[in-house]
Each structure stands twice: as structure tokens, then as C-alpha cells.
Image (cartoon, rainbow, N blue to C red):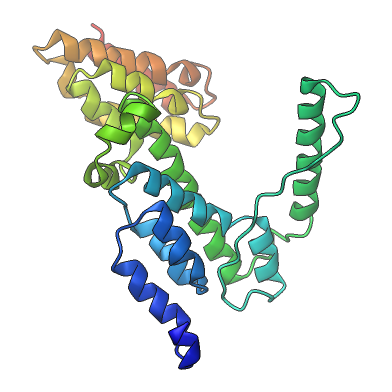
Length: 269
């Protein structure tokens, strides 16, 4: 109110309050949501790591809400003015008369999918502006951090345990670390349970390049394990490979298969 009364820049006032306040669900609503400059808001969503896991989740979700299709379309039309455009999640309401639960869910999902296709049709992905490309890059990082947060929750023992065990300093490194290198480190520590939680996303990857890179990285990083005096480390490493390599065995990439076979020979004599 004072900022408006004295014709001050409200963004600067809220930015200062946001920076001086620990990140929480409440501070996101009270301060960050009132800042209009898109680049500044996205920087905070990407760079700040709250001490509380709920705040971390809330910050990432807030960033994702500002990088969805509605924002991308507004930027393309030049209607954004550099503002952070909050894309509210649309809920499709339909009459439940004559519908069973499964039928209603199917109908709602179809309506939501149709709405999303309509929005996608308004975006020319072959001719994105610089601002649109920056928005897409920010969204990709936010999605990666969100996925890694879910993985970290599983490593900590699930959502309930994660609330007590969450370490924001560890997560700041964990969210940006190469997933294969993380797996190797856990294998060397004989953390087989953690490996099972870390690696499903790799074994199910549909990207041959990612699989090839994973196999190559394992070949480079794991030779020392084959001579390890710790049977648990060897067992964990072998488990890692079994989880990683089923999809590689059917890969069309000879280098991936060769790297996988070499790694197996080194680890599983």
C-alpha cells in the first residue's frame, strides 16, 4: 500500500521482502506471487533451495504454473510485457448424471487433452522467439528439478519420512548431479536399495543417446569395482547394471551394447 501511495516500484518492494524472508508456502503467496517481472521470478524458482521440502515443492510448482502453454502463447503474441503470467490449472466440470466413476474420469481426461491440443495448435514451435525459447528452457529445468525431488523423497523413505529427513544442502547438489554418476557412487557405497529407487527412469528411457551415454559412463567409472574387496559393492554394482541394461540389450546402437557387455565382463566375472 505504501509503495503505491508514494508511487514506488512495487516489484522492488516485494523483491526485498521475499529475499529477507525464508521461503515457505506462505511467503510464496505473500511476496513472490506479487512480483510481476518474469525473468526475476523464474530465477528465484530455479536457484533458491528452501530448507523445507513442502516449500521446495511449492516453489517448483509455482514456476511450472508460470511456464505453461498459456504463457508461451501470450509471449508469442507480444501480450506479456515481460510479466510472469500465472497459468491457472483448468478443471473441466461435467454433469455426473448417467456416468460411472471410470466413465467420468475418461470423459474429463479427454476434455482436458482436447483443450491442451487446442493450445498447442496456437504455438509455432518452428519459429519460437528468444523469450519463448528461454521460457521453454526454464520449464525443462523446473521439470527436471521436480522429478529429482520425487526421486529424493523415495530415497528418504517416502513423502512422510522425507519431511523430517530432507536436507536442503544435499538436495541442492543432488538435483543437478548426473544420475549415472549418482548411481555409481551409491553402488560403491553398496546402497542397493537406493539404486533401485534411482534407476528406473534410466532403464525405461526411450532415448538411445541417453542409454548410450549411461553405458559409456558406467564403463568409464566402474572398472575399479570389479577388483573391489567388498562383495556388497560388487552386488550393488551388478544390480545397477541389471536395472540399467535390459533396454540396452535391445538397442540399435552397437556402441551401447559393446559398452554394456564390457562393463558386465568387468563386474561379473
